[in-house]
Image (cartoon, rainbow, N blue to C red; front, side, top):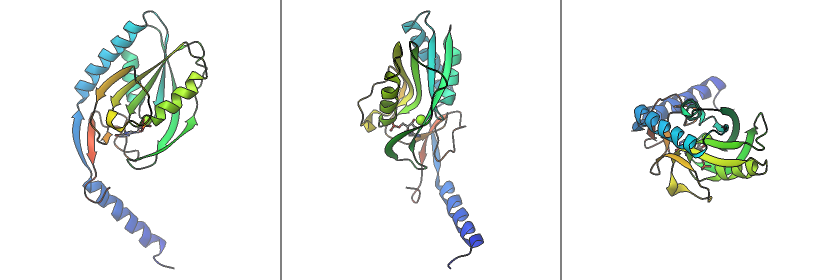
Length: 198
Ligand code: IMP
Ligand code: MG
């Protein structure tokens, strides 16, 4: 046997702490800019579907704040549902594999569905979800993303509503996480991991 459990736990904890200390956040989009743009997006969406009931489908967990803020700004008849997929591990790189981990509560057949996603990166997640949803015969299927990183695109998917187009950097905050942390930050920031974090 090598190290005992207590010692090993201590070493792991120290390593995690060191990593955290090297993480730096730079604000990219302030909470004010986020809210102003979301209000505009909500108006745009309502204008495209006047008087029509809209069914917002949020992709857990990253899109939660975006969906709630967007939903509050869309006038008229709006309903929500949520779906969860896993595409990323704990790090900042995609595995390319998408798996459904929580399905919708209700049918989307005949509904005007707006898929609400935090960020469009490689596009693998959205491509997978759109395939799943198309089979379920919605009346219309549209996509709203808060952030778009076009440089990283692999799958040919298109978002109908884009909040902000951003450069190829790893972002966190306003729902977006790094290993489940930073989701609660009210602004969107760029995370840099320092020399050892990569
Ligand atoms: P895609 O399948 O590569 O388009 O990735 C989409 C998902 O990956 C998003 O819903 C996010 O959960 C996650 N993701 C992609 N880029 C970032 C990022 O910069 N920060 C945090 N999460 C990201
Ligand atoms: Mg997501």
